Figure (spheres, rainbow, N blue to C red):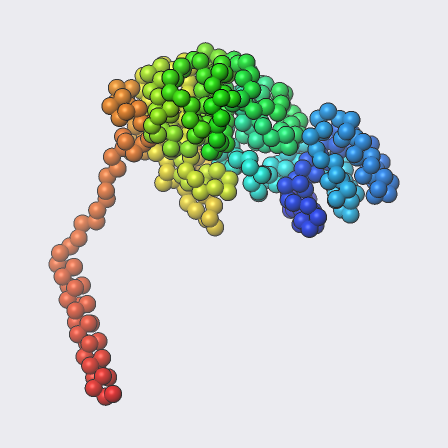
Length: 417
């Protein structure tokens, strides 16, 4: 059974009744209900459509994990509802790895669309972070802008702390975590505003939203800003700097943060420049990697990976320029496993001879006014083709001869008019 293909059939059937994003919510909730109590939900198939809908609404109202869900979607989908339930029930009873199959299917569904305003991690990003970070056994992981939580859940930490401002995405993320069998502390929260105490985690892994506008009066007194003590006024465009400070605040003294940020932060002035100076001088920046455009789902924006380390053993900063890796196929970036491993090797220092990597000193970064963008430090050689003058003259002579013949034919035609 190709369950991904089968579930997309139901997406198409429901397309005229509800947005695709709503159908993804519906499948997630039904899949979770089937996992939790397959016998109870199987009994609903004996009821008429109206009674089935009412029972499902009562269930979501009484289950704390499902109260985020808009139960009116059961009514909207009533024509196909029992067939969808039957699909998941049969899948549950015929597969010992139901959770894995459904988790894979739901991730594929979510990755096939941009979920509202959420910056959904692509398969490339998830694969890259898994290889880069490695085993998270025994570690506590935090993501203050988790969205659907696809990457942090895939990392399989001992404990995962997830926060997001969007109630629906938090709901779906909790279902994905349950299917993956990992322990999560998951809550709806505006991580930049709510001033939650530090969890002292081992890892922060996050793809925070791009271009969020900030009201400085809502965040200026927060604890996570006090460690760096930046004197400049917080502008409305400072969200990247706030996410960076919030990540550092959540880490323990040995912790590391892996943040996906837009490259503009690496060289902008004002508040951003002051933060860069602080964290460079405190030797917190381990590496900066520029990624090719298209690494984010449904976006052509270039991104970068900023790695912060509270226990660095080197005073250099590793810069990696991966912008020219990968190829575009049908408008989508494709990075092979070998290319992803190559990026990881460059970041981790396993390929120091490449012209795509350079370790720069803090003193050199000072001289560049604390810019961390690769273009300030890399000198890419121009590969100019050497020309054979004799051959080029022969080619020029042939072209001139061809031109003369064509000109003569044109003149002959004009004389006949």
